[in-house]
Amino acid sequence: MQAALPRLQSVSRATRTCLEAADGRTGRSLPPKTSPKDFADLFQAQRLEFRVWHDRSHCSRTQIIAPNPATARGWTGTVLLDEFGFIRELQDLWEAIEPIVSTDRNFRLLGATTPPVDDAHFSYTLTEPPPGTEFPVNPAGNWYRSSAGKLVHRVDVFDANAAGVPLYDLDTGRELTPEQHRARSLDADAWRRNYGIIHLRVGTAAVGLDVLESAQARGRDQARFIYIETDDDWTNAMAWTRDSLTRGEIGLGWDLATTERERSNPSAVAMVERLSDGFVVRSLMVWKLGQPALARGRVRALIEQITRRGARPRRLCVDASNERYFAAEVRAELSALLPVDLVTGSESITPPGQAPISMKVYLGHRLVQALERNQLTLPPEPYVRVDFRRVRRDRGSFLAETGPGGEHGDTFDAVKLALHAVSGAEGSAALPPESVRVGKAQFRPTSWTGGR
Image (tube, rainbow, N blue to C red; front, side, top):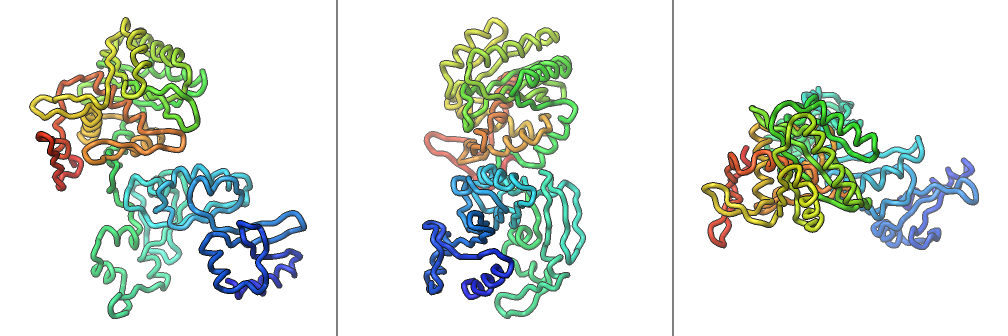
């Protein structure tokens, strides 16, 4: 790169521009006699910057920066991301770099990666092909629109082989066909991801993609997700509530939040109707409000709308783990309309014939089991899919990652509370061996794979 710089500078002068290499930290141009070691050190320290001056006051810059949200903010231009399937904070980074590219129609966002190990990673969502997509062998690769609507150029090992790119045996150096290379692989799944470019549905997410997609496919005409930001959104939510209910029992779940900062957790309310063949999340509403009285008023209006429809809700379950005082105010105000249960995740419950376990684990597993038994219908919107996939199993419990807008599996929590509201302790789910405790010891058999 350093050796090519003088020739490139000569070309730039011919086009009446000026190319220079600079130290991005100091802003100073590199002297002509910069040693190869110093040049390489600047590159490794992510301080090497190339500038093309168009006149005395305007230049274009090319710089390597760290792939984290804080570093990525404040730039404009084309962004190149390498191996973005292995960036831990990819969703936050995506939020930071999207404005970089969207300020000019000539800018592009180009990324390269193989599918990630964990199907809950945001890169999986960005690149997963629609179900049933087939990819014939093509030396030019195959183009497709991902399930998230992104344009993807897919080149697997068979396409590369057709284009004349060989593979070699690590020991002998002998050229191998893709089939021969696959037969020598020690990790079949790793080969399928890295060479076959196959999106494998495995990972740590509490809810598998297959059961989630099935539940959302059933919900296209039966369930709805509404992000409430305006009065019109709330009017639409009430109209849907009025028109969607049948004659099943109804339970309400409310995952509380009382702030509206950018990174604050949203408040989520779920309305679940129990039918003869399972449960339907008729409506799932999310909002951010810093006015507790207005939030209580919304839930009161929802209850009254359901009652006018001729279906009295069985009860309302409210998460009181963090917002204890607000939860108590909710119960005091709404208990005249229906029973209100305050649910604390750390409290213990003893299902029939089983050992005591925390409410958080019990309700989380109950929701997952309803999905895996094909008994739950969910709204089809992408927000629900992404938020449900934030919830992960971790050492016998459930943890959730935080999204760029403060999302934290809030819809998952609201639905599990609504399921509890409509069914109580009836038909208690058999908890997996992972969660069974004997005395102070805890046993987690490694053969359990989430009940599937």
